Length: 94
Image (cartoon, rainbow, N blue to C red; front, top):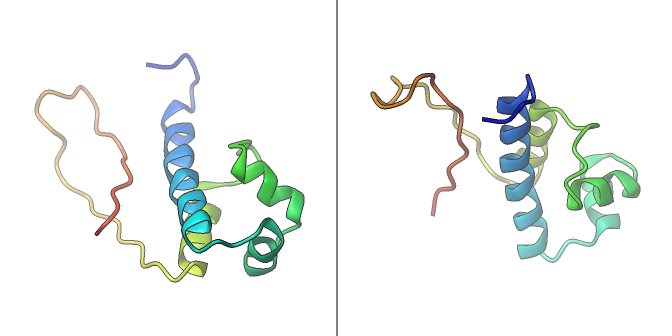
């Protein structure tokens, strides 16, 4: 476990940012075009691309995914028996 009190949130944001960045690359969107789509300044897209995520909430990253024409489903289920606490993970559908 990380020493950060918000380690779970940080991990989630990295997972979401990874997916956003992969979609931007797959769709060959420039940072300028991504900025226009997301309604943010281009330097913020650069921060996202470099995983400087302090300015981005998980909710905002989820919104970016919907702006990239993706549906986001949230599934809540019992934790795996071997885990001490539940966790959050981002899965990508084929």
